Length: 299
Image (cartoon, rainbow, N blue to C red; front, side, top):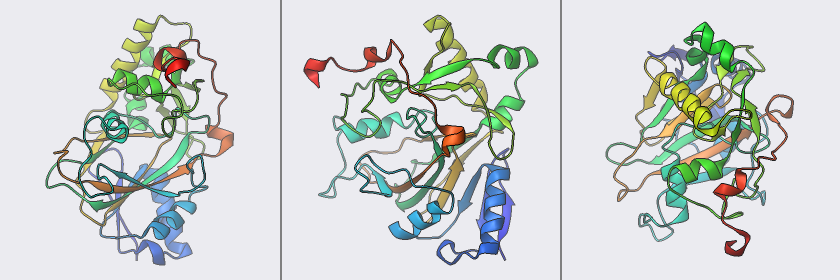
């Protein structure tokens, strides 16, 4: 019988007494309900194959593909094909380091992500945790003045902007998420399409608020993020090979934690696209988006 054990935070639950590839419809009903209630789920000791992880993701919806439609499960790793660790100048390494900032997946795309599913293949000797933060509880903790201030505000989301802020500049088309100049505009307060709960929809990809001076907007976004991502609203998962963890991008932020980058860390990622009715927005135009993209002569 499936066991659901809430974590000692405002989010998350540990799911045991289950094997994901053998999940029955009754077990899925329990898992889906726990997902909506807790926002994040941890499944220890699963050791899924690529196909099994993708099939699990498809229970939640359509898998978000790379642009060529070639992959469902994607490796998130600092390991090169020859088995050695990437160096700091490689594009992929810069993207991995950027992921150490709090974010929600694909908010910089017209269709934001619904669910992210990570499984651990190879873990370093220490560090390399994945940390989650509960934006439902963060919204609940806001004072009424702040709630009123942000109720009708929206922010642009851009991977160019978030990577530039982290010290990395990317060319148009250089990688997934770097192929459009237009920036999606998303409300700071999101109503969950299933539970109806309100949450903050912020993170490192959010960078401008229309009608507000940029310095004031950035200060507001930074203050909201700093206040939100604190105990008891956070959980850091200490990975063991075979673990699976998933979270609801519509109400949970996440980030990767540092480790010794000379060691190898290999995760497998499946990202489920959101339903267009709730996660699709019109892209840009943001007249400042070009500031984060190299000029045409460098593309």
